[in-house]
Length: 114
Image 1 (cartoon, helix red, strand yellow):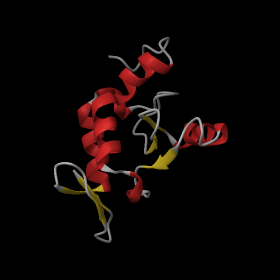
Image 2: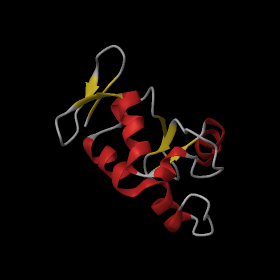
Image 3: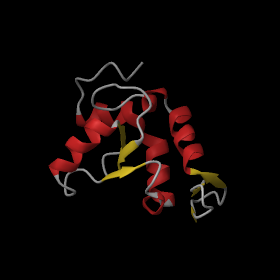
Image 4: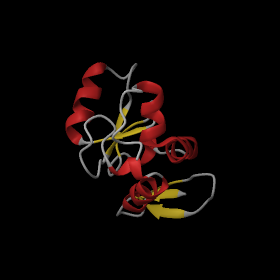
């Protein structure tokens, strides 16, 4: 998966395939149904990500994560921060998903696992 923004700039992933950032978001949603909801509050269609936790977040929860500090949660926009989505990061996000990450970081969350 290679992510490109509307201006044609891209970041390369292991597959060498070019997709736009909105297409990358769609792939993340399709890879795991739990990714279609914010990992913290459950709101629909999150467009933010914590790179090191491997979760997708809504804008409100992304602000909370940013306030924790980048040493705890490295928050990036799924629509704007194209250079953050290296092949390794994309593969981690596709492999983990919100449900699996929440099973590790907040095992009490059950609404995302279905």
